[in-house]
Length: 259
Image 1 (tube, rainbow, N blue to C red):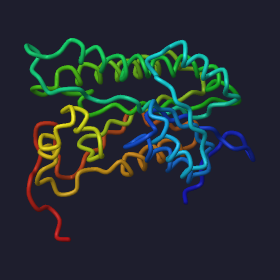
Image 2: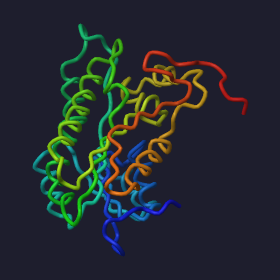
Image 3: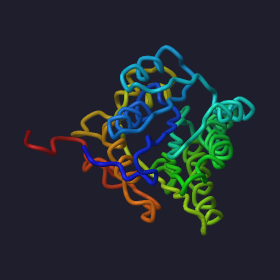
């Protein structure tokens, strides 16, 4: 186990992870708990969240990150926050710009961007305490390039990226780090399934023939690495893809590894 670099010698550090009921958020919560963090898990689905909280020994908080008032009330229940992982997000649909659903675009923006904004604003006072903290935004490679039928998701992730970049500039001179982890293809149990509204055939096709897409645990490892570095070291942006995916538009489908 890597030793977590804590600015509070001898004290437990607190990490708040959103979207923690499944996928990348659940994996991050498990990993940070393993590293010794007191983890506060945030998501909308209470039953799933309770299971992950039981595994990690963390605290489960059922919360809709798009509800600014509820987020502020949640922040008032915390005494400390050393790491905030803004992971709640996701994609809806794969339509062209011409045919895309404005409601889907609005929902993606609300969760990916405004959810990140609400948590960051509410927890910044705690992150600024006692030597500073770390904000980790889980974006996507879609935050840095576009692709056909991905306009709504890419637009939301570009906005989330811009939020983090701007925040880092505005916090210059304060001991608060702003980290972006931008994953490429990650095979989780729900991301593609949610995107295609429960169509398992379309969801499976995303990963068809790809030899070892990323797992949620791989992204959690990247988050753990970034936050464990000394407080004066800031990983501005960490882009992580499976080896089979050279770029957003170029993925090898077929055998890659011998075993």
